[in-house]
Amino acid sequence: MRTISQAVLPAALAVTLALGLAGLAGCQKKEDTIGAGPAEQAGRKLDEATDKAGHELTEAAKQANQQIQDAAKETSDKINKATGAAGEELNKATEAAGKKLEQAGEKLQTKAQEAREKDAAGKADK
Image (cartoon, rainbow, N blue to C red; front, side, top):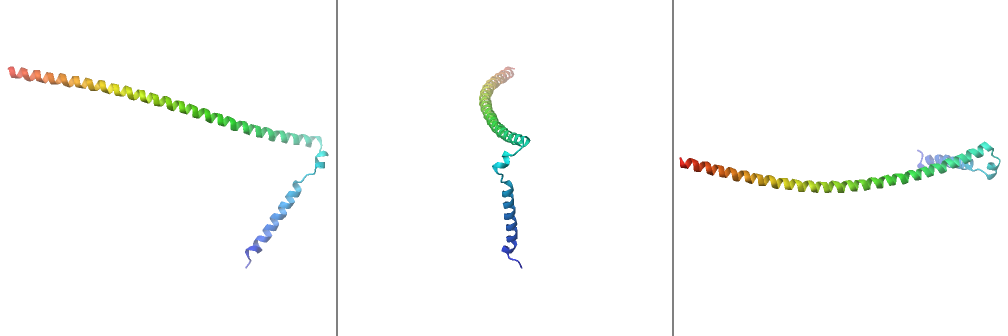
């Protein structure tokens, strides 16, 4: 039966070797760029410009997104205030209408009572 260290050791060596080779492959001496042809130099400059433009666009997008969020929050706040004010006015109008209906109902009850009393008096006279 193999121990854990026996199973891990070959994998660790393989990873270490791969990283070492990748590190060596990624190293580039300054002299290598001096001898580069015009197309390679132009390609490198294009890569740099593209990276820079990408970073600038990302930053501009972040700023635009923040401005949009700020504007949306401000608009939402204004809508909430307007809705609240409209709701208060609607409540006041509803209350006033309710009072007028109540007064009209009282008048109807008074008129109905008077009519019943008059009718009862008329029947008593007969």
